[in-house]
Image 1 (cartoon, rainbow, N blue to C red):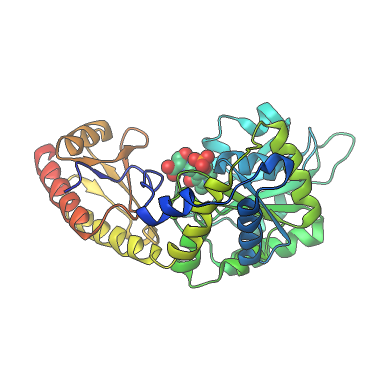
Image 2: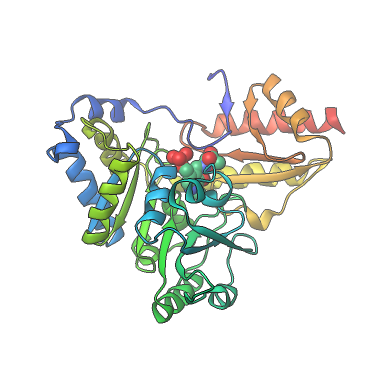
Length: 344
Ligand code: TLP
């Protein structure tokens, strides 16, 4: 039995034996000099899956979002993004600090933005106003509990963006989760944005890495920005091999994570002293509110071998992933029930 049932994030997974073997056997070169064949293969494969011309392996989702914003903007431009998006809340202010862009926030409802509100917010550059250069969309939407933005919403925002000459960057850190839960191909989501990034290091089980995809010219510009940010890596084929392995073996199984999250959510809905919106549990995340301080929940669950994160004073997040099987979920359910009655 594992010492922990670690539900803090889907980033905590250990590379499997198969993935480690693929990494050990990877043929590598110096990717900054452009001759790592495994990196090239991953970038081509990722681009093909997304239906884009080119891909770029970057160390993290955060760096990929920063580059995604950089390639579509100049200092002083305006970027429209969700008030609760990862770029807004969890990237240490990078768009402002590093790129000098203006961030203007819109509110989404259960993670789903309003195309009308976005259309209304777009402004044309003038002597007085910054011009809107970019819209950032996040699917699945983390802070809303891994909610999926439906393709029709992407369609509407895409249509506006073409009419108004504004680019779209899609933070698809968990786009494969969105694809499986929403029964929509990732290509369909990717067709409605100029750049898309997805993470290899979340539900797909890799130790590091994200891929930014877009047209060839944009990705060449992105390569230069990556260099500027210090994200050029050398024998990164070792990481790319893990990525290729994940794309081949770990996508379909995300459905298991979603089923396990649904089991956890159904159990939580029955507990005293908590509230949960079951409609928000669409993929691998479970957020719930607690009457007792969230910190006390985290500590009490930890004592029972279950790790989770407190977000704010009264909100808990649990994320399912490939290292938590049904037995782990059962342990978590028992721990949650026991903590709920202790804290009631
Ligand atoms: N999210 C992490 C934390 O930073 C919150 C997590 O555990 O969920 N976009 C989205 C939608 C994300 O959820 C994350 C990571 C990122 C980008 C950034 O990825 P990394 O951590 O690779 O920089």
